[in-house]
Amino acid sequence: MVPAQADGPAIRDRAVAAKPVSIGEETVNMATNAGVAAGRLRSFVERIERLEEEKQALTNDIREVYSEAKGAGFDVKVLRQVVRLRKMDADDRSQMEAVLDVYKRALDM
Image 1 (cartoon, rainbow, N blue to C red):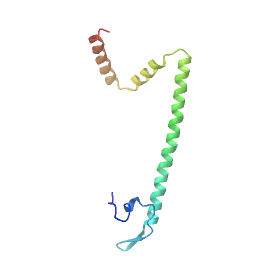
Image 2: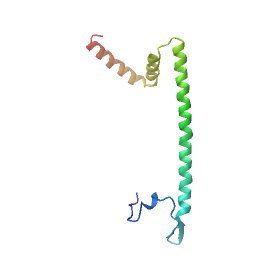
Image 3: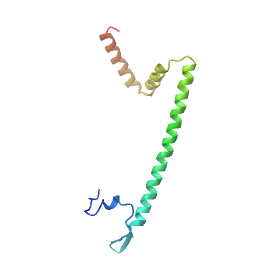
Image 4: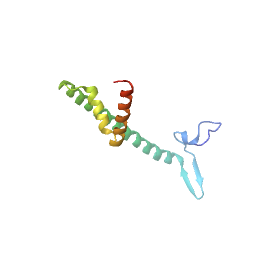
């Protein structure tokens, strides 16, 4: 990050810096560069916002499916556990179940 200057925040934190800067023979207008960066940033933010909306819609859909399952007489808590177990790698699941069995035996369950 560019260090802050005495007269204000770091240059890269400024919204617009209209003063042209010479780099060798090229003159780069920082306002134009900031506009390009702002456009790209806006694009990222909008994509993230759309994905967040889609994620919320999917969350609502999943909630509805669990509600349907509950209405059909299934135990939602156990159903969630089954879904979680199915996501796991078979070896990890077997190892976890073996440790669970050891713990249950230790507690006389």
